[in-house]
Length: 163
Image 1 (cartoon, rainbow, N blue to C red):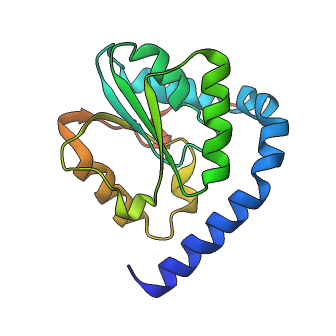
Image 2 (cartoon, rainbow, N blue to C red; image 1 turned 30 degrees about the horizontal axis):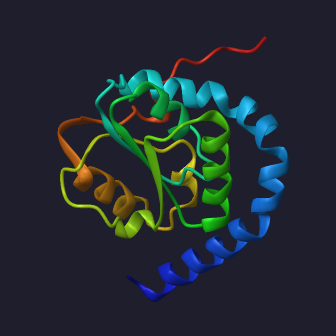
């Protein structure tokens, strides 16, 4: 990986780990606020009970933990750069009795999964943090099974005019 990308990744990792206690404190409030976007992603992915799903840059676990409820006989792999954020996700999963998931600390630019592993990939807000968006998208596509699902681009979501 490019040295500059590595530096960005390490800075982001340190920042998210530093602030993960704050996310724990405010997670319920924040997740309720972000729920509509997660719901749209989940609807677009049309999760099946046996799906194996990858949730990229999941932070404290959403929408991956909600997806795990839909993929009841499948599995969800929740990833993030920051282990502190994933610790919050594990605590939330325990509280909700969710067991068909695992967390993996990794960078989207170097996903540690075989080609064609997942039935779907979700990524709610991670793209805005990826220093190389094309590399991230390429890695996501690599780990998807042929015919697998990615949510549509943000412009494809329903919009509402204000006023």
